[in-house]
Length: 103
Image (cartoon, rainbow, N blue to C red; front, side, top):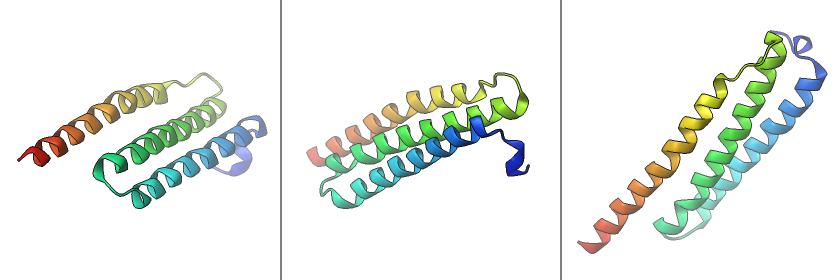
């Protein structure tokens, strides 16, 4: 695939979404480094990772739709799985941390 294959109307918003997704993930990673306790650290990467992945998936959906010249919605299923599994994983990690502090 050559960059000229992607139309400009799809390339510009996709590039903006990829930049936003990268910045959100970077902010989440910096929050992981800066915060002091486990309970404070768990929020920044979860939010940054979920929103960052959402932006990347939206950009992928936009470019795939432009290249296929028909609506492509496969990425919505991936987004749904991420939105379901990320909070569940976070809750399980927090419950494990709470139970370790009790012992």
